[in-house]
Structures are given as C-alpha cells and as structure tokens.
Image (tube, rainbow, N blue to C red):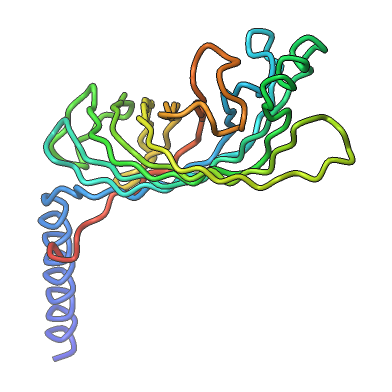
Length: 234
C-alpha cells in the first residue's frame, strides 16, 4: 500500500511539473510586445550662453527619462517618452561678447529644468518576431515629435547682486534617438542611448541669435528595458 502511494505521488508531481513547464513554454510563445524603460545619464544644452562648445567648455547636467513602448512588428515599434533634463549656461565669454549681450538685452546666465514628452517610431537593425529569440546585441533608432516646458532663472549680467528672474517657455521639438542594446536575460535589456531634442526655438535661455543654430538638448543615457505582457494576454 505504501509503495502504491509513493508511486502515485511521484506520478502526480511529474505530471504537475510537466503541466507547469508546458504552460510556461506556451506562455512565452506569445511575444512580450510591451517594453517599459528607465534611463539616466549626462546631458548638455546647446544654448547661446551655454559656453564655448568647440573647446568643450560647457556645463554637464543630469537627465532622466521613462518610456513605454509597443512593438508593432518584428522591426518597428512605437515609443512614448517623458523626462526631465537640467540645463545651465556656462563657459567664460569675453568682454566683447558680454558687450554684445548687453546691447541686445540678452541673458548672461540661465539655470533650470526642462520637462519633455514625445512620441516616436523606432526601427531595429536586426528584426525579431519574439522576445525569446532576439539577438544578444541590437541597434535601434528613430525620430518623432514632442513638446517641452522650460522653467529657468535668468540674469542680464554676471553681477552677484542681480536677482534672477523666472522665465517659462513651452515649445515643440523633434526627438532623434539611437542606441545599442545588450540582452541581460529573457525579459530585460541594457542599452546605451544617445538623444538629441531639436527644439523649434532659440529662446530657452533668454539669449536669441548669438549662436548660428537654435537651442537644442543632447543626452547620453544608460537605459534599462523590461519586456512584459499586456493584461489581456495573461
């Protein structure tokens, strides 16, 4: 009797483990087409009073982002990203430059934060149909459209006695992103990602027309990406 019980117990657990394994295998046959990402890293702002960019004399500030991505097929996905980047003026402008800024009533200093949100399609260099058979290393990139809000404090001189004035501006921009991802496991990647937020304004810093181009933001981030199911697939 004891022997029959032991054999029955063994058979039960064997079939139970096979059933669970079969369920997990079947479950992972359904591709995890949703991705949540969190990134952070250094950044800088290309501003008229941002510094001497050719001589790499400008301020480096942190940036943080979070994204939600929906894979559309084996090569393309749609990504929504929100985040914040801190910006600052920098460098050591000459007396000649300061005279030009004074004549134009331009800001000498700018410090603050920029909140942004954008939507963009992204393309993978190496396509994959299921999250379980993606390549160890992949490249991706794309561009889209977004809106940002800059909140800054600005001064019209370098005088320590001047009280900074708060300035706010909302503008659109074109996000341009590219990255290289490395597979950490079945459901997660780590990526190095570069981003340029090409704005539609030259007035994030209160200093207009001094540089050849408008005001733009540049980021380099380390990004953690996690694949997950939608609720309807559980």
